[in-house]
Length: 293
Image 1: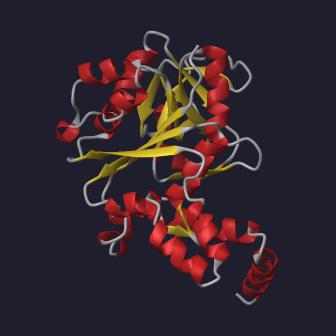
Image 2: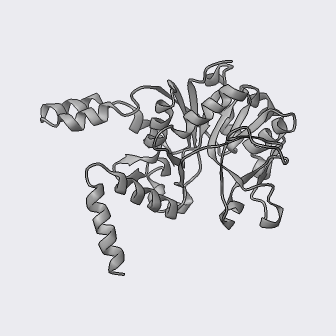
């Protein structure tokens, strides 16, 4: 079984829920305090043992490429000015992995974005993380958990968590066919996109992390297009699920929907509370603020 050392991060979408700022700034590099969402996802990949990362850019997202491209001139100016700490911070961006880029010229769906990674994958299994799904795990990063699950079962892995609220209808929901879990790994016979509450196949919702085998590329190409002539990854995974090649893994961690304003605010608050420099001060502020409401 091939060791997983590659990760793909599609960064498509127009970010319309964050307009007007996303007119100029891709939603994937909107900040959580002083680091972009995508920076945290890249760090998760590196902490999971990933050595090569492909970022699939949508049109107009050159700022993402600029963020991960070293700026030696700026680093030198900072060092010459005695601002070594700032220069070191810039130098460490993406350090630990080789980062490359592909461009999805037209928004032709999640499946099409994955197809842009075929040459990069080079016949090997790889991790996939959507660019607006942030997951905080105190110990073992979510991507690393899925990699370990793949090493146990050798199948495509869909990262899920249990959602008990009505918000579950916003997500793809795994149909485990009544099968029993093997630890945190469940069988998967299908994925239902945004099912009504009375037709939920389970309470296990897909939350932006996958392990995919190279067979996914041929399956995507053979998958009929959906709305807007787009190719959808879920449709391809459903084909593989029907022949027993998909599992779901109930990962440990807190997931934030960074394509949503409320999710973005929650992430900023949580990361501020955990901040080693000013977290304690921010907690005090929050307590005083709530007491004053």
